Length: 254
Image 1 (tube, rainbow, N blue to C red):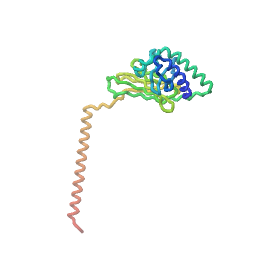
Image 2: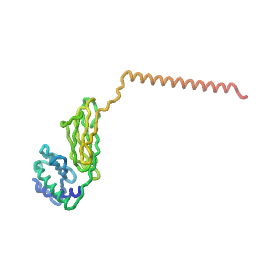
Image 3: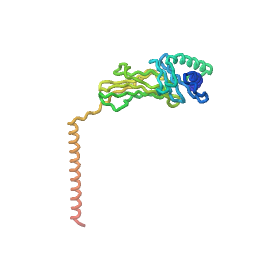
Image 4: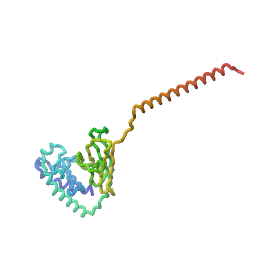
């Protein structure tokens, strides 16, 4: 299903590309551009446009804007974010018709592997970034939210687009800027078709053992005592060995 889907999108996007402003200088026999459409749990879906496997731009439908991989691309092409909606609908209809004609069965859903970790070494009171890495899942359909002390967090969050992984799977990063404290705990909540229920990946500041000055002094004293005992025992054994050897020489042969 995935490979067939990619072929449909390559063919349909070539005509669209040649209709963009500034495309007159493009030679059709050298064009290898296509786009990837990934349906999400949002009603609209996502539009991502790539050139030979490199992302050129994607449409952020929540902010209603086109986000370019390099700003220089926007000086060559123009794409109105609102045009993505009818384009998505057209691609979905084409894909549905192709699936029905070829009687393709749906690929089983692969649940994600989720890990949460800080970007930098954690210092209380110092700004940092929590990273939620969602890996090896299919299809590219996710709903990810951040929780602080069980409450939804929306400020300071960001995310990447769906990134290709091995064996026709995907991975994705979600970020949360935060100031670590000893009291706050965080969860990355992930919902996916391959999961029976949402999964929570937990993170909190790990308490380190606080060594007081008194404890340090006691440890040093204990080490000193053990060292002195070792010296005394060793000296006694050496002296006894010397006396034993001297007694055998004094007695002589029988």
